[in-house]
Image (cartoon, rainbow, N blue to C red; front, side):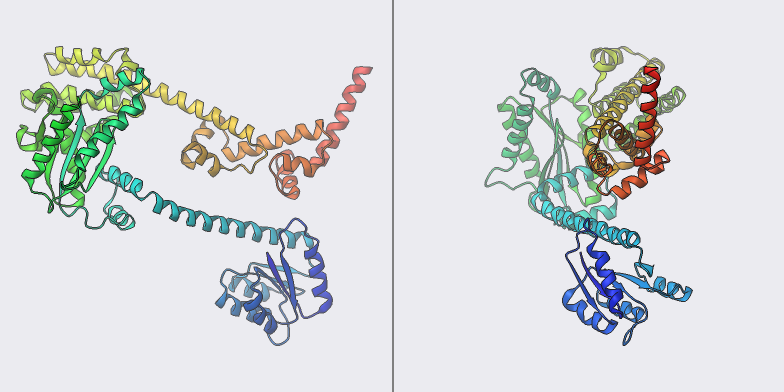
Length: 547
């Protein structure tokens, strides 16, 4: 930190410099002085100080005029007035000109120290933010393909607004990609059975990688039209798109058929749902939902084939009414409310819609709802087996029901069990998280702990983590950190001969003055007073024991 002292009286300049030189804990690189505002203005261009300490009334140019001139060229430069005059109009001028402080002479060293310390911390924070921004830009360049993949996944799942779509396309240099797309959702058949087999052999990740590698290699063969994108949206599903202008619809379908045949030769069965005419970026979400819905017809139409919207009775209408994506969102909300009446109301409304469907669709409606529940459980790494002890119980029972009423009553009971299960799992996860936060704080008391850093460490938002912690402990994370630091320092004050400054450093306080302030705020006395009182009580207890 570079400081310029502007003062017309030499004795006052020397006093200010002497005070500044006594601040050993501040990173003051250089101190320069001058006797008036005119000279100071010239020095700012060559010296470029971080902070200007300036008198108000001076010859040639007063402090207020100097501040106006400096702000015009260096808006971020810190400016503090040091004056004998305790006048309202001077204070008002200082505020109107957006100065950073107004100190009265004779200067109080502690006030000046606190003022400069605040500037130093703000400067470090600004420098850190600039460095983080620079690093972020570098990371964006390095990880552009990964960011494009994440953008496509969010786009397909309908997580982006129109403004966000346009912004991300510009950021990731993807303008014009989606003006016309031939789109397909590729699903690996019998995926979970195979994945379970490889999991037992501890080769599950290798299986995932080989699937991706195989599909990607076939679609990117030399001499063929290259896909615009290929992205994994789930372990068993991949989405790909080709520019409509690059490939005719029939050639696109032929390419998909070759993909199925080539994978079959490698003992991998694929079922592919296609939407050959996606006109704009906003239509991709609907195309993904429609293809995802079509893939459910594997149950009746078989696997290892291409599913086209025109081949499926009622598929276009069912993608909208009822929209199973919307049903799944509503069901997720209801299950997480853990309210039996809300579950009953949801099931009642759903099966009222089912009764208005054709008979062949009534038979599959309960299966569709059960699939939604399974997907919700999968989001938490769970499955039907974790709730009921067996997957077969669900699908076997659904096949046996002969009426909508039987299905409805059974589904109500099952959904209540799932809701209880999710509630218990969530409570266990939250309790585990709170304990992990406690341990983290205990292990890092000597560090500069703060809510943002802890939230970043555990990959949670600050609001969520803080609210969960307060619900469990009746205090915020910041309050808990301070409480633990104070308790640790109390033990050290009573059990060691370390100085207050040493103890402050041991519990993560860089400045002993701030540690004294926090300690007194929490304990009603300074650390030194606490040590003295604690020592007397300990001697008194020893005397009583000897007596």
